[in-house]
Image 1 (spheres, helix red, strand yellow):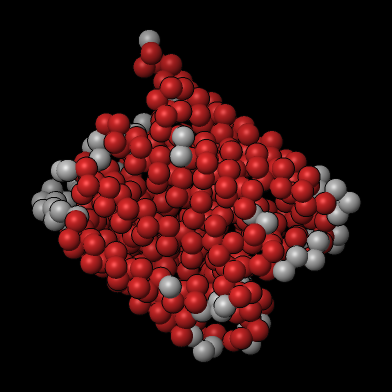
Image 2: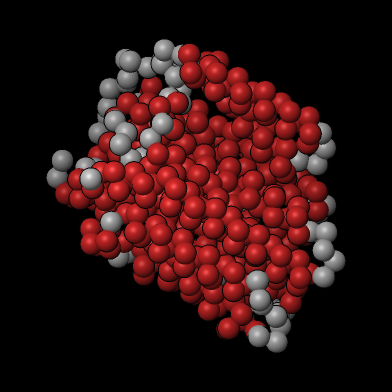
Length: 447
């Protein structure tokens, strides 16, 4: 494959991945306008985000498996089409039911796209080119989420929140045309067939788990159903001849450490992305636009550092970058726990964001590398599905846990302090996962 084709394939992958990450966070700074335009109660408004999380998180493993079985190019194209239609319907929504259903449909497209993007990357890149491609993919994971806050604020304040979704439609259609032209068609896997029992139990189990965190009623029932179904899924995968998610993925300590660290890290970061814009609007009087723009220190530092990750990995190694990146993020997050109005934005928020931007830029690419380490071509889709599953579910669980533990504190500023210290605790757990699982693996390899 020539280098021009590789560059085009990487561009298709990164732009598509960027779109779905953007839509996961663009909602945070646009919720006030959405609620006003569609006359949504706080409960209904929460479901604009939750409906997307339910289908996205619930179908991720199935999305990865479908790519392995039916061909990644074909499934990727289907995911792009579903995402485009879902985005169009969100933009056209005229009430609670239509926007919630459209967001759920959009989440289906994201669940197909997210694991397939990474699997396509693994298919078409190897050696040093793969290291650089994964670095770019990891950078997109961080930049897409944080830039979504900025773009959401821009659309909500200067144009319309609907435009934030309409813009996905032409981009997705362009990606469809480019996919047909530049991404080679691969043969379907004859070794694997769709594991119907595994697909059903994982879908019900993951959806019930997300609902138990974000739902309004019967959350304990949903949690019980999640435990039963996920337990059944694990038993099924242990016995299936062609499992949807081979349990051997978790026997490699480097991958396992990458999954646990990513789960904890995203739980902390999503909590910060969700709560900090609210803090800036309630405590500092920022508009949605200004609150979004206030994330530029994090976004810019993330972008600058992420561009250097491939070189830094070659020089210092993946594990050392993880240790430095997660530690730096923890310091930045803990400093947010000391914010006061008197300290102000520049010192109290911008400086910690600079540290978190550096940390995030050094962390997400190496975590992606760890999550797909030592996998062969037949497991690429499944491993990619698990990486994206822990990314999505980790964010949902971390956010729900931190909000639940801090929401009952009446003083809003103290509540924020507690939330950021809890988030710091999650990042420390991510660091421990690297120290206890990934570091020993590389020490053994050197010996």
